[in-house]
Length: 253
Image (tube, rainbow, N blue to C red; front, side, top):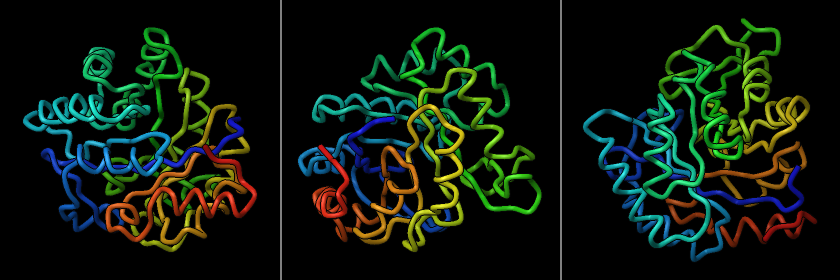
C-alpha cells in the first residue's frame, strides 16, 4: 500500500452547492464547491473528492460544470461520484476533468459495471464507494447501504469489498454511516477489517472531529483519510491534519 498518507477533503455537492449534515440527514449549505476546492488545494490537500449526493438528472449538468471549473484551478487528482451508472458516465466525467470516478449504488445493482470501468479505463480510475453501517444481520457485523445510508442492502460489506476488488476496483472509499458527521472519530474496527482483506488502497471516511482522530485511522490501516465538515466549518485545515499525522510519525506529502 502507499507509504505516504493522503489527506482528502470531501465535498458533498447538491445542485451546485456543498452541503453537510449528520448521518447524511439535515443537509445544510456549506459553500461554493470550486472556491472550497481551491482553498483546500492551497492548504496542501493531496486530492479532492466530489460526491453528488442528489445525482438527479437536472443537477447532473451542474456537476459537470463544477468538475470542469475545479479542474481548471486545482492541480491535484479529483474523484467524482454519485449517479454513475455506465462507462459513458465515466467517460463524460473524465472528459470534464475528473481523474477517478466513484461508484456505489449502480455497482451494487449490477456488479459488472466495475469490470467494465476497469477494462475500459484501468483499475486506477474505479473507486468503490462503500456506505457502511453496523448490523447484526451479516457475518462481519457490517452491511452496505445505499441512498446516503437510508436503505440497507443484504450485502455483507466485507464480502462486497472483496468481490469489487476482484472485479477491478482500484481503491476503496469506506464511509461509516454510523460515524458520519458525528465528529466522534473514525470507525477503526471497520478500517482494520477493510485493510485486512484489501490489496488496494483504503480511504477512511466518516467521523473526523479533531486533528488527533486521523492518526489512529492510519494506524488501523487507512492509506488515506477523508473528511468534510471539519474542513468546511474551518475547525481544521489540511495543514493541521498533516501536522498531527507528522507528529504521530506518519509520513505525509
